[in-house]
Image 1 (cartoon, helix red, strand yellow):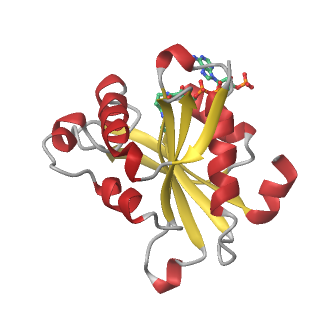
Image 2: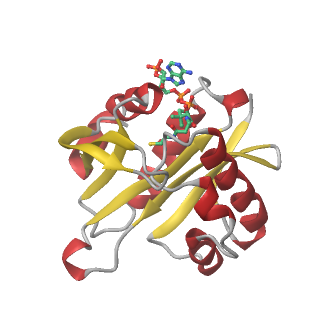
Length: 176
Ligand SMILES: CC(C)(COP(=O)(O)OP(=O)(O)OC[C@H]1O[C@@H](n2cnc3c(N)ncnc32)[C@H](O)[C@@H]1OP(=O)(O)O)[C@@H](O)C(=O)NCCC(=O)NCCS
């Protein structure tokens, strides 16, 4: 399997929207956002960031030839006090491609891009405890749990326990 990993740009907008909505539809218990809320939006939040090609709000795509088959996002808030941290979001690999290390390489490429921003010390994420595959992936990549939100309510109104995890720049060096 020859998969390529690269940041999305304005040429990938249509494919991004399609795969993002697919991820929400197929895995409603993996994400905070819901397919129902997102599909009616003329523009998804990240479409604007992709268009602008921002260095601190981006999506890395996994491509099988020209086809987008996986995504992993990075988001840094504009809040000055949070400038040294960013978040991994929207991670998804299409079912047919799962368990082939695509998720692993998507995550590594995203982390590598994010740590190119000199001010970034920590990369955080939230993952629902019931999502075994994602938990294994993040544990293996060196993320450490720093908190647990019990009964986090997602956009579908479902209560799910959510692990909060962090990877520091130093830890990334150890695990990559
Ligand atoms: C989580 C996800 C992105 C992983 O992608 P992937 O390409 O399958 O990941 P990898 O092949 O790199 O596997 C990474 C680890 O996850 C585990 N894993 C992945 N898929 C698995 C499966 N179907 N069953 C059991 N374990 C699985 C493996 O144990 C693997 O660890 P290992 O190499 O030590 O065995 C993918 O399963 C997915 O898109 N899930 C639905 C959406 C989702 O949950 N997103 C995450 C939101 S936080």
